[in-house]
Length: 424
Image 1: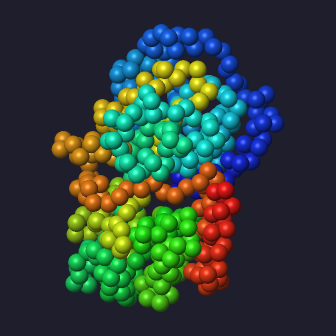
Image 2 (image 1 turned 180 degrees about the horizontal axis):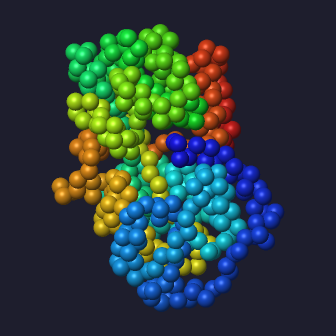
Image 3 (image 1 turned 45 degrees about the vertical axis):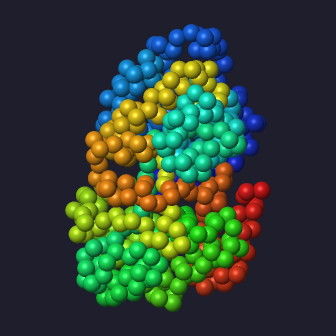
């Protein structure tokens, strides 16, 4: 969440302004010089423009060379603005104005949700994300995030799982095994809580707690979009009880984002938490990532053991006049070879599950990730086009509830009103 905090807060205002003055202010290239050649001729030696911030990574040049050699298409790189609000404004301006100077973009879950619903992206299910390719990705995730109205709008570039982490030193001191269900989860949380240590640690700042609420709603078999669902309410009450009734997690974490939560876990202040697999390098740098210290464990089964996954996506501007060449690049990115090349460049796990499961593929924490792939349903996070407004709104309501400012009944009512407002 740190790279996407407030990410879509300004999308709607940008869209409203676009119709007024963007067309006149943006350098829109309406030339059709390449259209015939792109549609009917060879794509070899054509140049397309990709907007990404990956180009700042040390391995980018080698990765770009692999793409160009495999496809015969040259890449012109535009670096994405580093500030999230600037990134949203820039990308939204380009797409909403019909600017064809950018062909491909690299966007996150929140932005593809917004852009696909707005009609800014080219569908890819017929020439890139065909059934024999799609079957190698997480089926549920493809349905949850890049699919809209039956079309698929992206090629996911990597996979991160919001996994269950356990401090094995604290677990050993408690004389217990890794929790496998709700009862064992709570029993370990109680046993670990003492002397300034809490059994469960969280990141409950309003724009971050979304992930934990969603995780517990999944575990209880609820529905994030239906807060009148008894199972959704049970998940919320469980989180409240962790802080108030059982006192196994601190209310001070209402101010915490991921960085302080991770540091407290490293410092031995938490017995367990939910965190993305992308934290492996952080814990490894602290010399804490190991089966005897901080390690990923199978998601405990309450009613389900569903887990969230997240990714960034390569998408095609619907206004691009170089769609054939762009799709050729996307075909490579979606291939086994392309997914492995991206993994080598970025240090992230491939989005294709067959690449992860290939015996020759190696990565830190890989066995744990394979366990999730085999034994958990991997879901996309529940998002709406106004993602950050949605995330912050529900987070603020949760904070009021867990702070005893409102009752569970009032929290449910307010959250459902917010969901209905943003999904109607």
